[in-house]
Length: 47
Image (cartoon, rainbow, N blue to C red; front, side, top):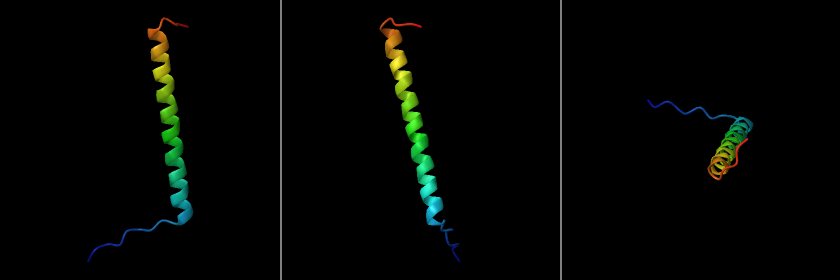
């Protein structure tokens, strides 16, 4: 007999998607900032 998957409430699924999208956007912003710092350092701009 196969076990039935647990169905999460709709609000919990929506909250999960919100957190996932937020984490992905923060990671993308961090990657873009790192790339810009790398390019600027390569162009000769230093702190």
